[in-house]
Amino acid sequence: MGLMDGKVGLIVGIANERSYAWYIAEALKNQGAKLAFTHIPGEKNERRTRRAIDALGISDPWLVPLDAGSDEQLDQVFARYAESFDRMDYLVHSIAFAETEWLQFGKFVETPRKAYLQAVDISSYTLLAMSKRAKAMMARTGGSIICMSYYGAEKVVPGYNVMGVAKAALECTTRYLAAEMGADKIRVNAISGGYLRTLAASAVAGTDNMAQRNMERAPLRRNVEGSDVGNTAVFLLSDLSAGITGETIYVDCGVNLIGV
Image 1 (cartoon, rainbow, N blue to C red):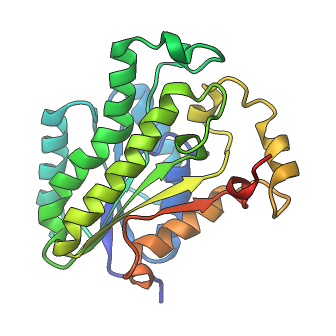
Image 2 (cartoon, rainbow, N blue to C red):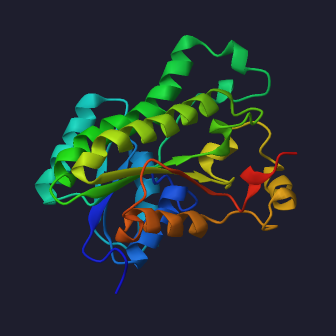
């Protein structure tokens, strides 16, 4: 028997087989969960996401396009989900965006209003927007929501810039959602994953040697692996974590402990 047997939910954010969302999906599938997916609009993005889902061994997946910056599309996706499934036991929010131009050394102070607000909108507000729409389907029996953060939300990571601001807002949003949605037996937590070479990470300046630096500094003397985060996600989405909400769980081999 798996920890997620009989549970069904939605995963937002699989870009390819190297994304944290993919490792979360793999771990959920291995524990018996039923999975539904979204992809960024566009044929190229759909093909990329379908290849990643194929690699999970899932045929004929529930997969729909979603521009998370559109309330209309959010409404449509959650309405379509409700037509296909009678409940939502879990929701995985694993999306973020900031223009690459502003993820460079010395460019934070130059960040224009539009780029700043867009980063906070897509990377943070969308957690609130999705949680609002998931609430009705979770309130019947309870549910669990997780999002993905990074240590740059708490400490300055050169080049992370406005994305660090957005992730700080994401973690704070997690706590406020947890406080309100707990009355409906809905838990909301964040995972602060260590550095993993993903499409998103490659957009941040200064990440070329981050893996080596982290391995040298980490108490566990290794870099985090996707499966580390995937297994933690299963714990947070399963009944094993029934008493945990509003937390940011670090899964970075201990890098966040080290001061210098």
